[in-house]
Length: 305
Ligand SMILES: NC(=O)C1=CN([C@@H]2O[C@H](COP(=O)(O)OP(=O)(O)OC[C@H]3O[C@@H](n4cnc5c(N)ncnc54)[C@H](OP(=O)(O)O)[C@@H]3O)[C@@H](O)[C@H]2O)C=CC1
Ligand SMILES: Cc1cn([C@H]2C[C@H](O)[C@@H](COP(=O)(O)OP(=O)(O)O[C@H]3O[C@@H](C)C(=O)[C@@H](O)[C@H]3O)O2)c(=O)[nH]c1=O
Ligand SMILES: [Mg+2]
View 1: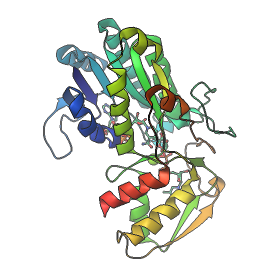
View 2 (view 1 turned 135 degrees about the vertical axis):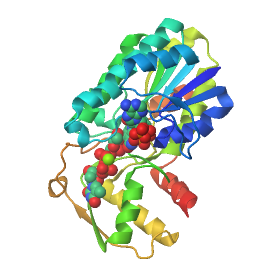
View 3 (view 1 turned 180 degrees about the vertical axis):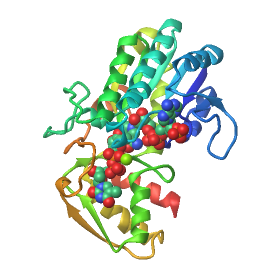
View 4 (view 1 turned 45 degrees about the vertical axis):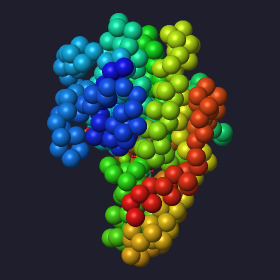
């Protein structure tokens, strides 16, 4: 089993290097050709279709795990073409390459494919209606992967964070050191999900899925919601981060965490008000339990302390 991991220096990609290693021969690729720490790896730029196909031909993986993506939600409003190339078109290219060779694809998508007007956790087949360019580009990738005919798992996750990388937790720790008062939106609800949990669940699901025959893998190809259990607002999440980080000695003083509305925090992109995802399909198909967002936060803070 040869596995090509794209985006090995992102939050999820970094964790996948470890979780996928026992599953086969792992070949890592990044846009720069270097891993975090500087070790060389393969080069894969999703913006360069020709080079991407050449890499696939040369490595000839049995499984492609695509953790690379354009993830700058606000900037995507001004760069929708770039976002769509990386998150949409490139995913179709990967899917078609895999379909032609009988290879499989693991891909990641987002809660931002939903408009957030829902009243209960979203299921995989609920109607999508992205509010912004990032969500539209990710939805294009989902559609392209499905249309490619490749055997695939598309894990829709949300609010990804961890001890490293660019994420909300690290922004809150930085602001907590700089300010006496944080103002955080309390009217957007979701499920903060550690990158490491996503990587571990991906590997656990793959151990089962790769052991199934082609017919069963085809029958189970599609989208699975993969998020922590429970739900909270960004304000709840920030409050918990500050409290736990202070208790763990990561920040000297705990700033006040004030609740504000989305209208009081203008951003270029609109974000869903409610994007909790129902993970029953993942649990039923792969027999996996998703821990609560509070358990996940305790793990990540513990890792940083
Ligand atoms: N972050 C989040 O909150 C969420 C993420 N997701 C999805 O999960 C997946 C993993 O996200 P996450 O790990 O958080 O993302 P990160 O932003 O941490 O990492 C994204 C990676 O993609 C790479 N990348 C960006 N553009 C290109 C390109 N044109 N060619 C090659 N590589 C590129 C970046 O490389 P470089 O370092 O060179 O820029 C980076 O390593 C993505 O599909 C994302 O859409 C879903 C829900 C929430
Ligand atoms: C920094 C800051 C943010 N906010 C708000 C803005 C926003 O509504 C919310 C979260 O901010 P972020 O910039 O981390 O959010 P954002 O970049 O939109 O996070 C999203 O990223 C993409 C890639 C996804 O796929 C989503 O699941 C989600 O994780 O917090 C405040 O209210 N106060 C603050 O001081
Ligand atoms: Mg962001």
